[in-house]
Image (cartoon, rainbow, N blue to C red; front, side, top):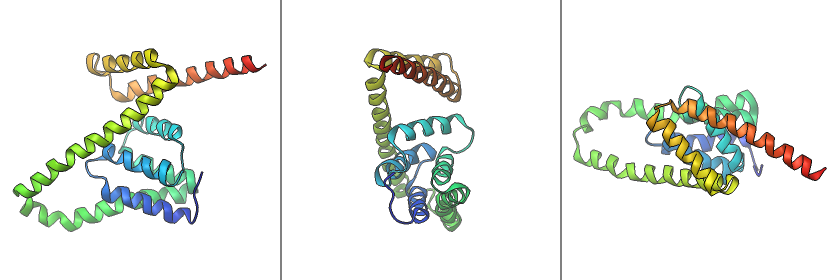
Length: 192
């Protein structure tokens, strides 16, 4: 971990930033949380973030709030988790209360509709870039053929068989556990 300074302040700043800038729901906030947790503060490695995201996706509830709680807990225990969640939800809660009266007035405005339409592609690109980075790491770790096979299998499970995404995530987590145990045994046997 490369954190310096007061981690409580870092947690509050990072989660407030994601709460303020995270437009479009939980999945759109994940790249912002990843940037702070992995790049800016170094709380997690990319691999740890990917594993945490997979587990958080499998659990019920808002993904961004679960990620905030986990990061706060990892850094500062229960107090950190409480601070992290409050810092994440407080800005948007205040904004919702403050802007509630303006919603009715601005709902028919073409300018507001245009602003919302302009933000949507940015969110799509951010999610696409994160998916590309995870796929690239999967192909590097598993190989292109096996990685493409797992990608195709996930597509079939989700789109053809209509399995719930949480079930697919749990299946892949299970495979990952078995895969890493096999690799650990092979590496242990190779070094003995």
